[in-house]
Image (spheres, protein in one colour):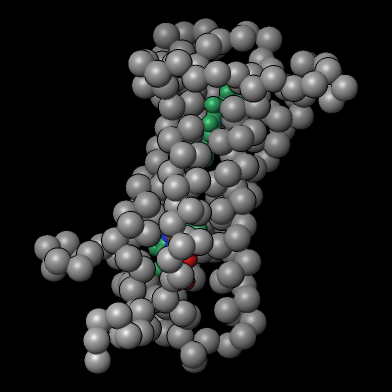
Length: 195
Ligand code: HEM
Ligand code: HEM
């Protein structure tokens, strides 16, 4: 069978790389987010963590836009035929929810710093100046918008944590209980050519 006709059984190298880079970035963002909120207000540590948090968060936004573009052009391998229809639906809805959060969390973060009374400029990784968003006055005062975006960002954290736990547990169930290839096809294959 020619290579092009072979049924796709794995996520391609780009999808795998973007998935795991995003996972590392999200874990760093959660750790930084919680640490900076408990750091001494106005301390140098808090300032540095805020800058890193904004830089890595905007990176997630860029990676997700790239990833969605790639995803539209490259269909992932189908889920196993043995999976009940309801589980397939749950998997698809779960992925949709994760994508919504991968866009929504950086966007609410960006919106909240753009409306913050502190008006601190964002300079990604200390080198790349990044603009603030502007909102039409009809949407509300800066202070009320800031409160709304901050609540959405902080609430989104918990929705994300819950969804990621269910998602990771489902992946581990596929590997260790159902013993199918759903997890391994998203894992990198180091040193074997076809990552
Ligand atoms: C996927 C991306 C992101 C994740 C997972 C994330 C996660 C978090 C977490 C865990 C916190 C601490 C919440 C708390 O305990 O109060 C937080 C707060 C915050 N994040 Fe993010 N964040 C992301 C993106 C961003 C971006 C892109 C920005 C800005 C450009 C940003 C700006 C902030 C700010 C300013 C706070 C403090 C909010 C406050 O004053 O209560 N975040 N974020
Ligand atoms: C921050 C954490 C994570 C996020 C945001 C995330 C996000 C996603 C998204 C959006 C997809 C859908 C890919 C597609 O378009 O088809 C996906 C697929 C997948 N993820 Fe994650 N993921 C995370 C963590 C994990 C972890 C910890 C594991 C393993 C324990 C894992 C295993 C998988 C697997 C196996 C797939 C492929 C599922 C399938 O074949 O349908 N993910 N992930």
